[in-house]
Image (tube, one colour):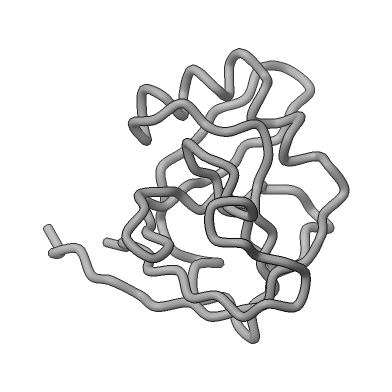
Length: 126
């Protein structure tokens, strides 16, 4: 078994379409996030556009959908010292350079973030 390693991802905050909030409120998704990631997600995600995404082919924690929804993979992460997770929806047209961060709190409010701000997320892989 490979030991876990930490990747530092840097990117810019941007406003999404609101789909992340819908996802985190779905009962089956919320329950799996609680069980597999370890916290109740705030209803919404922090969208970050990366210059490159090394997580595309990495093995994550699977969030299995109910019928007619897409699967997602998650990775344990930290924004500053706050435990959070990265969610990558497995949708055909989903941009490769975008990650969505979920947390037990509103990340924009907690860290006073606005569109265009540069952030660093430390991700546990492996």
